Amino acid sequence: MDTHDPELKEKANTLYWESDESVNEIADALELSKGSLYALVEARPTDQPCPECGATLEFPNRTARDKGLVTCPECELEEELALVRAAALEDSGLLVGEEQEAAVPARVAVAAGLIGLALGILIGRGSRDG
Image 1 (cartoon, one colour):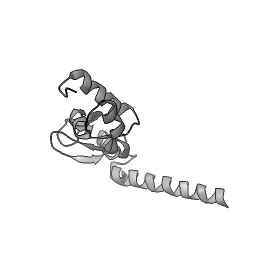
Image 2 (tube, one colour):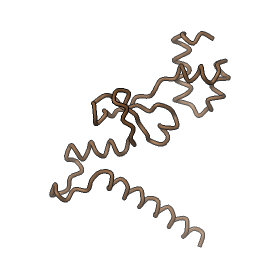
Image 3 (cartoon, one colour):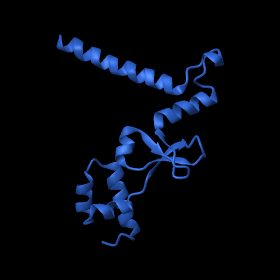
Image 4 (cartoon, rainbow, N blue to C red):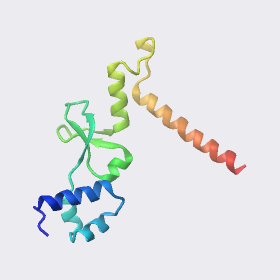
């Protein structure tokens, strides 16, 4: 297969980003090696600008997307998308309480929320078992 074919590149990206097929399955379906498939796959842009340089943040691969990890193609920032969004909201004043001095930093708020969610899941599982 011609890896310079724009249709092949589009199909590879569609299958990679929009299906649950494994990389091996996609490569086999397109009659490519895994290396050739990875060469065709492009990073998936997000709707979030980089807080450092303003470029559009990207998911470099599906694993990063599933974990919510983004990178900046310009300045190479690597961060959790949820934290970038929370920081942007905080910077815009949307996460600030009645007094700016009392505002909780976004990372602390997100971490506290995740801990609370984990505890809720554990408590829910415990109450079902008992």
